[in-house]
Picture: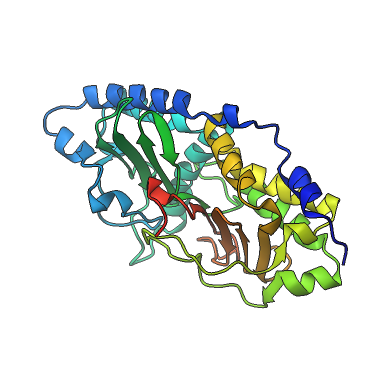
Length: 345
């Protein structure tokens, strides 16, 4: 098994052209505050009590990707056209252009689910407008405030302190179907893979390992039922397993870097830069990659990327409504030091 010195590994894995001064998140925080204020100004007296909660309310850390019957905040379906536009402006303030497009596509897949499950009994209600926006505290340049936007297969959570974004996770991105097999009016085109790189780049990395490396990477033949700590306010804190980046070749580190950059690219650049700085300031060589389940698409599989500051998980074991196996993805990024902007326990 080839080994690389730790210093070159740091350069190879995280040479993302980011300097500490560039990781300032105040431009995003300012844009978020302006968009949140604009949204709140459009609400009526009956909507405001639902729209705003105290920043320290425990419900701020109540999150989940499942189609829950009740959620905090105001439902997108219940917003006026103007309010919807301002809601989208807030979402756009946090995401890159490609991240925003991906978010909208995830929500549109509810149309595919609704059509695919038509006639079934006991299935959750599917609705591309069943997503909820909540503001916590008073948006501004001083003090603490935050916001969340979530529904089935999508959850964004942000915390801002004195004009800087200090929390951008949990960040959940899911897709069902992962690959669209049948066109449904209002949904994506046939062949669309909403989380294509998140899945494919991991397969590419897995297939690049030699036998000795695979013995470390492959943890079990069967994938777990789902990612860990779903809906829990605390991220999972078990020690990392698998193969450390410091024990990968340069070509493998490049593939690993591309996988991480796919998740970083969801966010507005200053927020992505902030994550990079956190990773660089810890020990990038200690970031581990591990795999459970099938090593080929179409059969249940799961991978985990874990470093000193974060844990990333993707699982694809469930079938889509048409019965296509392993065509239903859950992926989640959690910060181990400041999930929800809260210092780790």
